[in-house]
Structures are given as C-alpha cells and as structure tokens.
Amino acid sequence: QVQLRESRPGLVKPSQTLSLTCSVSGAYVNSGYFYWGWIRQFPAKGPEWVAHMDDNGRTFSNPSLESRLTMYRDPSRSQFALILSSVTAADTAVYYCASGPAYEGTEHVPPAYDHWGQGALVIVSS
Amino acid sequence: QSMLTQPPSVSAAPGQRVTISCSRSDSNIENDYVSWYQQLPGTAPKLLIYDTERRPSGIADRFSGHKSDTSATLDITGLQSGDEADYFCGTWDTSLSAYIFGGGTTVTVL
Image (tube, rainbow over all chains, first blue to last red; front, side):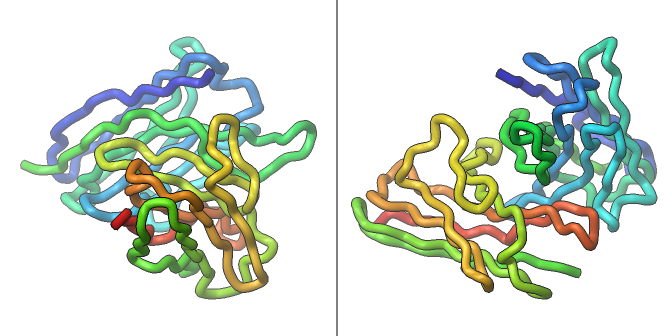
C-alpha cells in the first residue's frame, strides 16, 4: 500500500522559493510504474493540478506555473520534491502530493491519482 | 483554456439517487480517461472512479461512472449521510499535456 506524506514548510515569504518534499512508503519513487504528482487547493475551491513526473521521469507542469516550477526524485530518501520559485500570496494553498499507476497490466494509461498525502498548508506572507 | 464543467450542487433525500455531470468546454469527452474524486470536509480527495467507469478496490458499487459523447456522469445510489462531500471530475488533457479538474459539486443529503 502506497503511503505519502508531505513536508510542512509553513510560512514562506513573498518572492522566495517554496520547497516541498513527499516521503513515499510502499513503493519505489524510481520504479517506472507510477505518476508522482502535486496538486494544490485554495480555500473553498476545487483542486488545481500543479505537476507530475511520469514513469519515464519526465515532468509535466501546469502551463501557468511551468516557468517557476521544478520537480525531482530522490530515491536515496524515497522522496520526490516540488520547487516553486518567486512565490506570491496567490500561491497560498494546501499542497497535496499524490500518486497513480501509469500502467493497467501492460497498457500505459493516463493518470488517475489513487493515493494522496494528507496535505500541507503553505502560507505566503511577509 | 480547456475546462471541465460541473453543477455547483445537487441534493436528495437518504436512499435516493443523485447524478453529477462533467462536460468539457472545448470538445466531446467521449475519448477522455475520466476520474471522479470524493473530498470529505477537511480531508484529501479520494479516487472513486477511474477510466470513466471503473472502481478502485474498496469503493462501494453505489458509486458508478458513465459517459456519453458530451459528458461523463457520476451516479450515487442509496444516498447516505456519509456521502455529503465535494465531488470532482478530472482528466488528462492530451493537447495541453496537463491534468484538469472540474470545479466540483457539493452533494447534500436532505
């Protein structure tokens, strides 16, 4: 059973860089079988997809965030990470890490996120 | 930008059925790999349906997904008070190479 847990960066100042990590248990972050993703949610709003890394290690990003965003995997720590630069108050949200299988049997499939972390509240404020 | 449109809210009495629709603003949804998520208050979203109509292990068969050429739908039968939650559809948009979510539907059990 895959389990995910986000780090808790808490308060980040405007124009600084947000760094989030997701600790993974029950699966290998470099297994080539999963999507590893980040999804955020603003207060009283629906989820907004941020980015994911696919089974080939390629990163796909929300076009509105792509210029500020980096994702990477750290297999030695069983983690994957999100780096978001030049944050503003508009980046204040609950950030979830999530995963989903990239294959149904031998068929490559689009993402459906079946495991989620509990969420980390990130507040951007001076 | 491509969008998924859902009704803001639906409601019904216990034991009744609700249907939530999800339609695309720019094209038909018939070829999309649609998922549905349930979000109970204060918790992370939970996958209910994937590939339009398939249920992950452990999801009750009261939840079912369907699709026409214009929209995907989530049906909840035998409505229970524990079903009060927000429900979101989502799909991978191949033209954007991005995942998109619907705005969400709040289900209220009367």
